[in-house]
Structures are given as C-alpha cells and as structure tokens.
Length: 271
Ligand code: PEP
Ligand code: MN
Image (cartoon, rainbow, N blue to C red; front, top):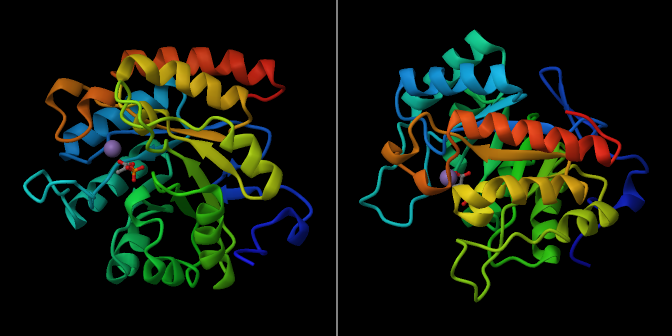
C-alpha cells in the first residue's frame, strides 16, 4: 500500500485548514497571489497591497528559489522572508513561501504561515518527513512527472509524522506539448478530491507558463472543484527576476478575480 492516511476512509469530512483566519477547503475558494520571487521590499509591498485590494486572501512569494540554472536569481533568502512578514503586517495577508532544504524549516517557519514544497522537491523524503513534525500547514505541489499515486504518497509522508495540514496543489505536468510550459491536469483536481479529504488547489501560472492562458486555466480549475488558486502577480512582469512570462499584471489579476468569482458562484461556492 502506498498510502492510507490521506484517504477519505481515514477522515470522513473534508479537511478545512485555518490559516490565520483564512479557511482552505471550506465553501470559499481561496486566492493566493504574489510574485514568483520576492525581489525587494518595495516590490512585495506593492504587490501585497494591490492583490489585497483586488480580492486575494493570502500572499505568496519565493525567498528560496529552485532555479533550473545555478546562474539564475536564487532568491533573497532570509531577507526575503523578512520582507514578506512586513507585507503581512501591513496587509494582514497570511504568507505562503517555499522551503527547499530541511535545514531551513525552523527559519522559514519563523516567518511563514504556510510552507510550500515545490514540484522539484515533491519526493524529497527527508524534507517531507521533517515537515510531518511541524505544526504548520504545508502546500505540497505535484511533481511535474509525478503520478497521482506518487503525489498522494508524498502527502502520506507528511501525515504519517503527525501533521495532516496538507494542501495539495496541481501545477501542471510534463507532456509532449511545447506551446505551454506544462499541461494542467484539470481532472486530477476532482479525482484527488474524490480519493482524499485534503484540500486541493491549482496553480494556473506554472501549469501554463503563459500570461494569456492563466485566467482560462484558473476558471477551469475552479469549475472542476479546486479549493483555491495560487497565482503569480508582478507589478512589472517584463522586469521580473523569475517567471515574468507567466506573471499577471495587477490589472490582469483584478480581471482574474472577477472572472473566477462568476465561476465559483456557478458551482455553488464564493470567493
Ligand atoms: C513557484 O511556486 O514559484 C515554483 C517554483 O513552483 P513549482 O515548484 O510548481 O515549479
Ligand atoms: Mn514561479
């Protein structure tokens, strides 16, 4: 058996995770928005204020970045975490940020409300085991070559340690298609929700890699039952230090919220 604790059989009701007053997995669709990377205090404050005004419920931003090239921007590290916590103080938005290394868990936990495990680390079992021992929610991205069983097996590693506050995130998988960065597996959302009681959200930004496809992918995800969205937003995407091509401007993010609200209402939910 690959997993059992993640299954509905082990927990009758859907899990609702309370993140500083924001509930994930309940009736409301939760929108987590922010830049791929925290680049400066001004940048994160500007995005945080804007996404809050436009309807986001939480703020995302990477301080430790898993970049394909070691020569690319690697993130601001602890300074980035400090900037995120200043943005939280000002806006009240809880923070989601990635932890790549088990040794950084105490540091990241000091600042973050939700710890993200990136797609590239989905099967970093040392990291998963350590995250099972903390008392904070974990956002577990699906690896881009991971089957649903491998993804749920990764979640099981966290649950088995005693932490069941896991949010699953479909962020697109590798296929033969080259027009999009990855391929959003829309049906994995209702399918995983059928198997598991854990909340499932979608990341339309990494799933498509293209700004013009983020809103349609977000709408499809919410129509399919996603409990939330993780969306990259940058005040000036062309100048972004990472993932500019898939980042929405704040104006486009406002449009996303308006469109997604209509879909949420059509499927009996709200934002
Ligand atoms: C991110 O959220 O910026 C990120 C690196 O995502 P993923 O791990 O899904 O590629
Ligand atoms: Mn990114």
